[in-house]
Picture 1 (tube, rainbow, N blue to C red):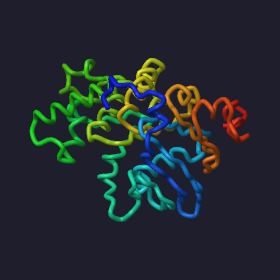
Picture 2 (picture 1 turned 180 degrees about the vertical axis):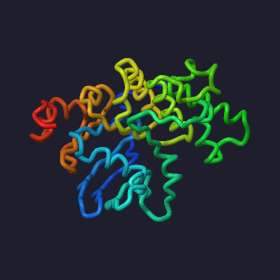
Picture 3 (picture 1 turned 120 degrees about the horizontal axis):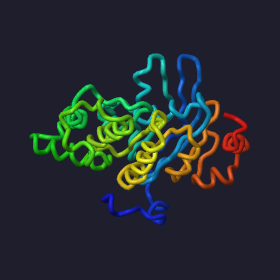
Picture 4 (picture 1 turned 90 degrees about the horizontal axis):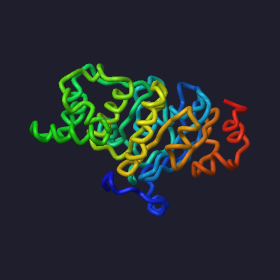
Length: 266
């Protein structure tokens, strides 16, 4: 589906489940950081994970592309299924998985390389381009999808670290897109940005969901309300409630959700 073909509400209702988590728990040594999480993520939807600091939402996000594998003493239980395959099974290569499930972090983290090489790094590792013409096409299309091409097309050889904070974050999104992922994870992608840059990223998220499944951790309930179709509320390591974003914010079922949304906890 191209970006000029908007997804309408009826299509959203019919979108299939892309990622399904069942009974997911996370332990750091003996400490149980996350308990028995069941949640589905649908194609062409943005799902926001909200909740107080330390509630487990970023820990859960990192389960979705096995980033927790890199943490000493961390153990994940339960199952996370991507297109019918449990991503924690022994025959799944975590490197290949992270190409399919890309991640954008809280602070922009461009490589100390040129803008061009920031985008080309992943495709080069994964053998996605056999010559410079193919790589040029990947770089251009990724930057266009991230809404950055017109701003940087004449300075692709300049360092990515020389861009503004908002541009760096869009560069990181372009870098994630370049390896043709199916799912994009975003861990508070706007927390280090000013309001103008934040608005651009939010607009970009809405465009990207037409081609990707997106899961975003955010501390901003206003942002969750603006960008997501589904919202899940975490509290003290538990997934308390999930549902359509409008329902979660206007008519939550659980008192803890109501208390968080109204500012009584968190």
